[in-house]
Amino acid sequence: MNKPPRIVAIGSTIHRNRLGRVFSLWLTARAAGVEFRYFGVDDGSVWEPLRGHEEFLADVQTAPDLAGVEREVAGALGVGATMLVCKPRPELLKLSRKFTGSMPVVVDIDDPELVDPWGDTTLVVRAKRIARSGPSQFRFGWARRTVQGMHVITSNPLLQDLYGGGLVPHVREATSAPTPRPTTAEPFVVAFIGTIREHKGLADIREAVAALAQQRAVQLCITAPPPVDARPWEQWLGNTTLGEGRALLERAHAVAIVSRPGAWGDRQLPVKLIDAMASGVPAVITPRPPLVWAAGGSAIVVRDGWVTDLTDALRLLADDPELGRALGEAAWRRARELFTPTAAAPHLVEALERAADEHETHR
Figure 1 (tube, rainbow, N blue to C red):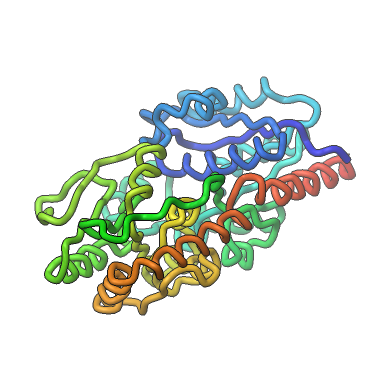
Figure 2 (figure 1 turned 90 degrees about the vertical axis):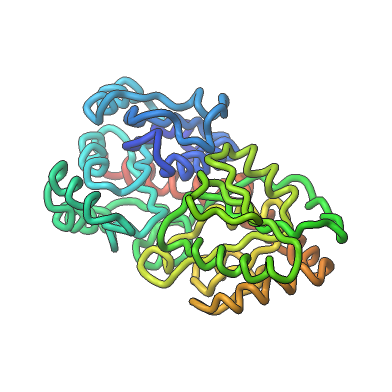
């Protein structure tokens, strides 16, 4: 059969970083020649990294609540449409069930929230969620059972092992070969680009760079507002757009990605690794399976909880620019092979066709 010409994607936000995965799927769909339109709840200003991305935002339509999203989707039905559920949250799965007779449905899973719905939330946030939505563990238990009978795509092999389905990874454009960094550049720039979460180990990165700062000129650039204990060698840039993050990578000598063990660290693939690889920037990572898989041998892997290992790895890259250049070029080639829209497009099309074929058979 011909590939489905349209994706009707649904989600519960335009404000949170879940929109980043929507953007990745949008890039992949465009590379596949598939029309993509996202219908989401208007829960605030657009997620900062995508602010000003007019081409993507032109394909985003909002409603005040999920009932409004349902109405908008009902108006978007037509031949060749496939619904893509962006996050297997219970409320989205329930909404998708209303359309299973009208169009094929595929669920995208890029986080282990069905394994650990609380993530790294505080007790206050947990209490608010229970007050708003009821006992979360029961809602997510229903969601876990529901997705077992649905067509699924996931963003990395660890999630694929849990849920099956097709693998459609995070993507970034990686068209230009990496630009060599000056070997005599001072200071040595380490980048942390992304949302701060407890399982992402920023405290360890700050401690490791602090130790390196006692030995050489170094700068740690972080895309978040400054804390009260900001240090002289740290540059806190606040929330940045994707373009600004890419510009930061153009002057960075390394990125540090410290995912801690646990449900989220062990199954989540931070897109900031794909950002770095697409820009040809060498990464220092912890041995979380999704990170090791994505890097494919192009990153330096350090032990969990060993800040001295992290400092030593950054020092090695600072002292050996040729090593950094070789790792960066290897990462860029790996990104070109697996993590561009063009590379991922056939996998998305295959998942859509599989869902459409089964839907037609049942009809």
